Length: 512
Image (cartoon, rainbow, N blue to C red; front, side):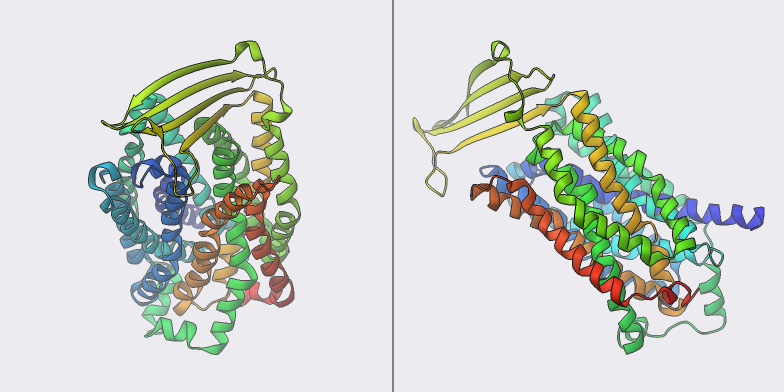
């Protein structure tokens, strides 16, 4: 490959990757701040319901991604790749910025969650058109036999976007007091995105159309009805369904388990301090991200199927042992408390003329260096303890753990292993999808299975898994924390079986 061609494709990758990375950053901020946002945009009288509602709103953005794939995929096959993902970039950036400006639930009531939901839907539509355009654009610039390597650079953008969102949140938290961040500082990461989007826009507007699409358009061979040719043609529809049920469905759940489910598990089930979770997750992502490129490159040599299927199988077999080990590493019943250092500080907070909160803040230290803050809040009305809708006393207990270095590095390793599974299934997927479909309907055909697999099967994972965990905990299940894993394990297992039986190696060169 000549230096001139290499330089040219690096320019393409840089422009495509930066825009896609920023869109993922925009999309991930909401998930990274889910715990905080649940207290801002939803009623706070039931924290668990508020958190589940936040995850459901987060999932809504994923659910509409297939519609964005259809709408923008059609535009991309009709007018071109470049102009389509210019529109998706601006739509995503604008929606993210506005989320950072919405008043809280306390200020405008139910209008707050409704507005957030609408903007999340717009984000989902935009992202539905972004990935297919970027992946197709890069693949159509890549030489034959190297699509896995070059498109794998696009695959890193989702993880890099998540990493940058975590770093921006950490920097913002470090720059402000805890009270200031909780009051208004959480909005800063949303506002910052508009500057990043503007820079990406300046870079993207100077890009040229992909040579494969330009050639097809010049020859008058572009599709007049991409939707009909993609899904109304039985031969092509067969490959769309195979891409979904034999690859992207399993890839989607493995991806979101290794990143979002791991993050929510650490914060909500293990109750580890949010900043510590962001830091350890960031380290694991930095260590794992180069493997996207490695497995993309390897898929050019060994084929896409073997690597993706191996990643799914490892995830199916190892998820439960991994999460059991993660939970046990910070289980306080297995640690020795230094009783002499335990402190309890009571306080009273007046809510209004008839309501008040009695708050007990307990700090504990353990011999291995772990420290714990437990805040127990008892709600009173007219001098009596309030009751919830189940007739139980309205008492909330929030536990926050600061873990020691040994536990922190162990958890980094556990998350890193999951990121490796992600890189195996996700690194080759762009090249795999591009090669399945002809140029004239490629954007539309590959976008739908990708976004159904990731947007619906993957995007629903945090909400469904958290629901399973919550129900199991209320039912008294000792290993309640593992119940949420049955969803990704089940979906990945079905996908693995279908992929092993029906995916043929010839797909690698079908439209190369």
